[in-house]
Each structure stands twice: as structure tokens, then as C-alpha cells.
Length: 460
Image 1: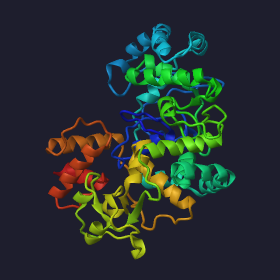
Image 2 (image 1 turned 120 degrees about the horizontal axis):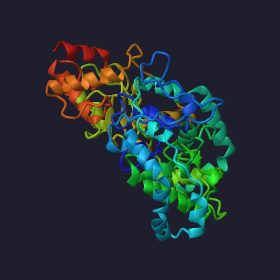
Image 3 (image 1 turned 90 degrees about the horizontal axis):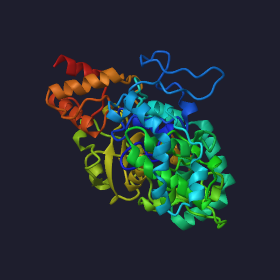
Image 4 (image 1 turned 90 degrees about the vertical axis):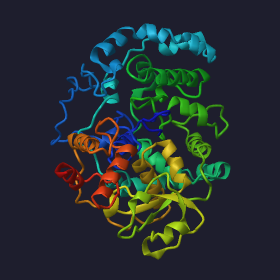
């Protein structure tokens, strides 16, 4: 699932949670309304949440209505009046895309058939601009996604579709356990794929809101898929952003990566396991997957380590990391000492470290959040018989609320460490500013946003 990031946008609940973790450094806080949404139900809006009241479902159930409020992003196209104005012009907007559809060899008959009766789903505007008040820690995220039930189902899937995985590994050189992990985390093995119409979602976003140019391509690509006959409209149901199928392809990603593995003339990544497995592998291979290489290693970081070295831009060989005192738990050797990796410390100096290889970056192309990629890599290792992480997480730490995250960024800016616009979302710029502050007070410069760091900023 490509995460909600430029230039790609693959939005599922797994991505949603990873993206808003304070440690992700790459994701962008958005909710999905699809994928694993049922599983994550109250992650962002539990009984203690101070978020604005959410719209209640209509009597008798059904979809939630649009709140009728301005979007939290402050974008001019996300004001309530702009949304209403665009919604009133929805039919004209869809019709105006016919010339572009014709240039993509979509027949006029099919264009009219597939767009007939389309209505905007304005609830998507709330989902697109959601601002969660509370976040989940990376250890809670991993606990939710890498659990015994999901692992047991994954092992069943690997056994049930052994022939398909065998053929895919031979053709694409991509590890079967990673494909199975993506399948499990994206849709809980096809049980939670989202139920929104991809055509309706992408048409809504192509005509309304702040990402119209991006979603225009997604909508036209969805029409191409239907026009070609790869999938039927009823198969193309998924997240609010248009990701569909067990491994959550966006329509444009489908066009780039989907393959007809069983030769039946259709690329069916929804109901055909052979096509699904091969297409997901093709995606990873084209993004640079290295056959026979793992994603990375859990490592022990020594006391007093200079965490300014824990930076995605600072890669070194395993031998060089060992010279700095970074080792594997239990003294296990690194199989390939010349491999280059960067150090990730997602929970700071009090948590485990990880040396990340090229395949970790490939998983991040699938979804650009470190927490997501770590979950996929760890899930894959567990499926192949590996052990849980050895070192403990700092579970005594609490996650900062959105108000506290905003305050932390504002304090960093006031003290000259942060030059961005405070928005409560922590990425690489916030983490770099936090490290600089930590180094200035003689604390481990691990970039971890703890309540203690916030308190120390307040006292400065």
C-alpha cells in the first residue's frame, strides 16, 4: 500500500496507524475508511479522546455523513463552502473527463456505463483531512499487527498457495514471506479490504478537495481497468482513497505492476491468488527488491552511542557499524559484513535499534512509513520461523497528544531548532530539530519525542 505521500497514495488502516506514529518520520496522518479499519476502530477516538465530536451514523446504520465542516488542513479547497460548490458541479466535472478517457482508448459506451449515476461521497472529505488527537506507539502498532492469530492465518495461506508462491519466487525473486506479510497486514488476508466503490471514491477526489490532479489520474486509470475487462466494478471496492484488493493496489499502481500470472487473459488482483501474489511481487521487484537479502537486523546499540549517526542518509557497512559497537543480540554475526545499512532507533535510546538494508527501503516504497515497513519485515521473519524482537520497548513511555506535539514543535521553533510550520505531525525535520536540542542539553540525541523531552523544553 503506497502511503499518503507524494507522489503515490496508497491508504489503508495499517498505513494510517503507521503514518501518525511520532517515530515514523515519513508518513502523513490520514485515515482510510478501508483496509483494516474495523480492526483499528478506536485507536484515534477512544473514550478519553478530546477530538471534536464525530458525525453519528444515520438511524438504522449505513455510511457516516459528511460533517459539513472545514477540513483540518486549512487548504482553500477543503473549506465547507468550496466542498459544497465542487459537489454541486460534480456531474459536469465527471463529464469533462471524457476527452481524457477517450485518449486512453476507453470507449464512449463504457465511459457512460461506468459513470452513470455516480454521486460524490463527501464523507471522504472528513477522512482525507482527519487530525487524530492521540497516536499509537510503535510497540502497540506491532502488537496489533504481528499477532498469533494473524501469523497462524499467514502460515495457512503459505501452505494453501504454495504452488503460486513457488512460481512467483522463481519468476520474480521476491521472498514469499514478505508477500504474505503484506497480504496479512494490508487486508488481514482478504477479510478487511474496505467497502467503498473505487470509482466513486476516486471520482469524488478528482472533482472535490485538495488533491484533484492526483486523483484525476487514479479515476481515469480505474476506468481503464474496467474498460479492459481485468476487473468488474463490484470487485473494485476498497479504501476511501481508492486502494483495493488484498494487497491494496491503487489504480495507477495496478497499471504499472499487475500481471496475468495464470494466463487467463485478466489481471485479477482481487479474487485470483496467482495474479495477486505475482503482481505484489512484481511491484517489489520493480521497486528494487534484492533477491536473497533480508530487510534488516535487530541490533544492540551501546550505551553512550552518538545517535546523530542514526540517520537514513548515513549508511555504513556492517563491519563499520560493528566497529562503533553496534551488534546483533546474542552476538550473532552479520551474514554479509560488506552490506550497507542505516541505523533506525524508532523508540530512541531506551528501545531496540535496527540496521536497515536496501529491501527495507523497497518496502517503504510500498508504504513510506518506517513503522509499516518494520511491521512487514518482522511479520515476514516470524512467518519463516523467526523469533520476536529480543530487546524490550520502553512501554512506560506515553505518546504525546496532538496539542503536545504542536507545543513541542512550537518550543523547538522558538529556541531556533525547528524551521518548519508546526502542524502536530512529526517527520524528519522535527526529528532533526529534536536531536539538535537533545545534543545541546547533553541528552542522547535520539530524536525520540518523550514527555520528558517536552518538559525539558518547557523549562528552557
